[in-house]
Image 1 (tube, rainbow, N blue to C red):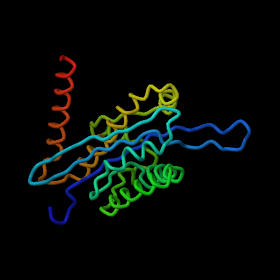
Image 2 (spheres, one colour):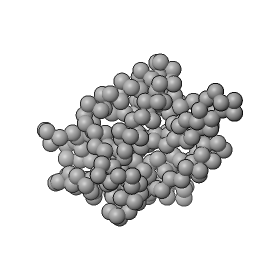
Image 3 (cartoon, one colour):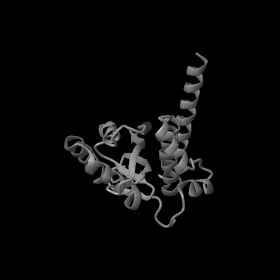
Amino acid sequence: MTDTPNTWVAMTAATVTVPASTDGRYPAEGHLIGIGLFIARYEDGRWRFAHRVNAIPAGVPEAAVLENIADRLPAQGMLIGWHVDHALMPTLLDAAATAPPIVAHHFLGRLHRLLRGGVVDLALGHGTAALATIAADMAIRAPQRDADVVSRAWASGRIEGVRYDLADEALAIWRVFVRSAGLAGLDAEAATDAWVAQRKRLRLVKRAG
């Protein structure tokens, strides 16, 4: 493990399209409304996992997402995503460009440190295919996000479904990476399955209580 990272960060983001202003002064633009992270760490022969998700309703500035997620980004690791160069990074950089300077500086600093560990774009070689399509071919569940559904959730403030989808999508990115990269000898897939099963059991216990 000395020549490979021991932390991997699967990242995804949700956006909505804000319509152009009626007076024509402002064009339609994308608006960041959520980020999902799935963090996997392999240390001392053991896997540790964590979900980190934040999503905001209409009326809350995009900077709130960056501020919430910044401290949750590991200082070192490898970033894994879907269409990283053409979708994820432009979305994050556009949001940072309109954020208060202190928020933008903190977020971009954390992101820069993470990016130094390397980037894997799982979409390379798959053209415009959706993550859900590629994941399904591997018998991996990934949400099929509908832009209109996301926009309605954002506008109504009922954002919980978006949070769940971001969490599920980040997990799917990690699972596709594990299946594709193999991570030979590390039992990453079995460890992930066990972690997910444990989380489900904990949720059932909480609901029953």
